[in-house]
Amino acid sequence: MKKRYKYPLIFLCVLVLAAAILGIMLYRNIGALPDDSRFAGLPYYKNGQFVNLYTADLPYYPDKATGQGGFVRFDGYTPKGRLPMEMLDKSSFRRPEHFAYYWLGHGSAILELDGQRFLFDPVLDNANPLNAPLIAPRFQEAPIKREDLPDIDAVLITHDHYDHLEAATMRYLADKAKRFIAPLGVGARLESWGVPSEKITELGWGDAANIGSVKLTAEPTQHYSSRWTDDRNKTLWASFVLEGSKRLYWSGDTGYAQHFADIGQKYGGFDLAFMEIDAANAGWPKTHMFAHQSVQAVLDLKAEKMVPMHWGVFSLGRNPWYESIDNAVKSAKEHGLPIDVPKMGEKYTDGFTGGEWWTDRALRRE
Image (cartoon, rainbow, N blue to C red; front, side):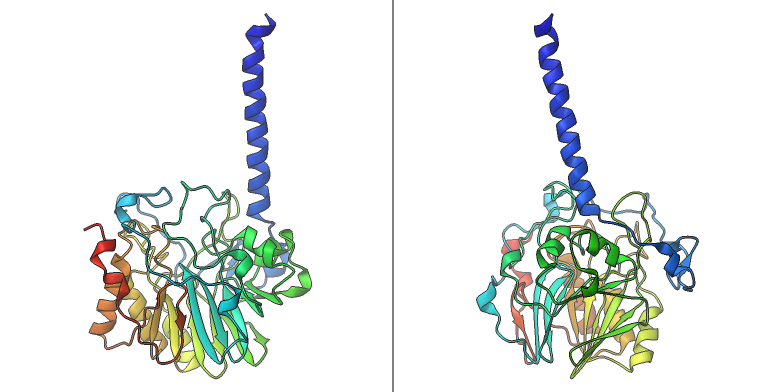
């Protein structure tokens, strides 16, 4: 009789233990939520949620969704081999320069402006709370390891989705980066991961902070936030304007809307716009931008040049990895808009003359 129940009991214990471990991992990576009472007077906070300016809802049309994969990897859309990139470590960086940019893939980057070093949305693993390889997996590794990140003056977070806010990296940077700038409510996530509250500055749309001589302003995007099933839009999402010797725009995640023209009018134009180009789909047409919309957004901003980002790592739009960059370059040329496309890890500065590395047929599944 004892033998009859021995193995089922062991199996049950293993299941309980595994469930407990997964639960702890989820809890550690989801992060805390803010006290929402302090948002009550904001015009873009209604009925317990942040809201977009121009769209009451972000529609989802499953019958119109195209492609395969999404959060589950579909190898038909991934490169045949490793995309060309330049690996980085601490020796790649000295004192922050007047202007330099290192794309780390997707929406992650290191930007140096007027002697300050900014780290945008650093995600170096898979985009899910368990870092599981089957859920929003990377098809391209990051060009830098977490422990090789240089000294950072400010970490900038655009919103709390897993492909933009990584708990492990925030824990690593908690006692290393000097400041953390994030939209309203995201500070609670950061604090729960060990970032001291005195290092965190939360910004609402139109709010500004100074990092050295650089003025940083959070501006609207059209998007949403969540890290679990019960926290949609409990924290804000934002783009960033950096004003120093150059005026730069960082789009964050966004659908195409009037806010680009509003921002262009407010600031009178930009030297450069770092713009999302990938993750759009006919099934969610207002949540992200198709590449031609990204080009139009840069024109609306009155920016002199475009650097595309938010591509090359994840297959979130259910399309071949090269489709969005091909379309962005084509559309930019049609509109006479200068566009530069650095490789991951490649140092991008004034006078950049990179080639069309993404057009290598050996990397495409056509």
